[in-house]
Image (cartoon, rainbow, N blue to C red; front, side):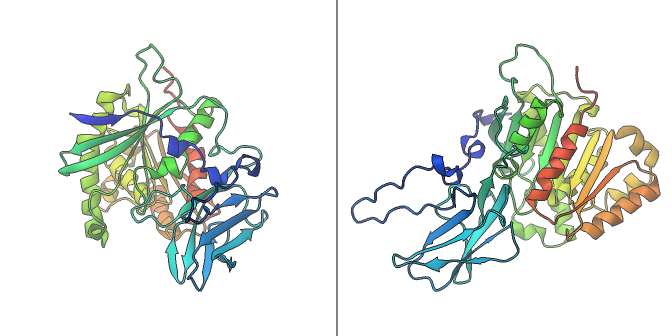
Length: 387
């Protein structure tokens, strides 16, 4: 298969935006060019770790900022120069990787002063990353780091160009051995794309920190665009089923052959896993439980239950499922709108006698919850993979 390969570290995904660095590291605002206004600094982390947001909108009547750290938006105030601003106290917005957006006269928009934008099918949120005093796994740490590779390829299954991002662990490119690594397929949700687990989810930093701490095994991770069709092809269960089937064909016919031809990954079933969040959780359950001869580790974060074409057959043979699967792991938050559907599926697993792990946590349907699930899930993978 001929591919176009960009095997370079994704700098934009690995470094925080300059506007989000501690105050001592924020450069002084550049002088405005003649006839041009000075650039707006937003967001700005103040010395007391409060965060100030700014937006130039001289003709706007009302501007607010809404972030994941609270349910209530913050109304901004306008100065004489047409700059709207407001400050969120440190006690309100604590450490984490947060999404936020401005609302200008009823229209939601990204922060034009912030280069950190969440990759989405319809981009509308910016990213605010506030590292913790004691670094969390999703914060940058001074440990050996892996590499994120970007592949563009032509999908024969779909008949059009596609992308997959691939993480390789620290030392992969420099070691002289022919060591083969476990492979994990890691999928995003319905609003996102193949970039989101890195740029916003910080999966690469999570892997780096857990591997450095000896909590996770070095592995190769493939992240695909989970949308084989346009958004209009996801309107009901029939169309969603068709989309999942098309994604499955692409995974097996295009993406996995590309990864297997390019990287030193094991073909052994007990060294293969698939997991995803929300829509990606449904894809992982449908494909993983429907192909027990290809994946021994299957996980779902706040996921949609597997397609009806798969679930009855899988549940009808618990003996085969328990013999094949090394881990079936599901998690969901108490305030997640998919909780009842997850609980229904978990009840069916228990009634059928299928071994599984179920984690019910605080939280809703959001990335702060899913990063924590990835931290919990990765150490459970490939427990006999050290070879």
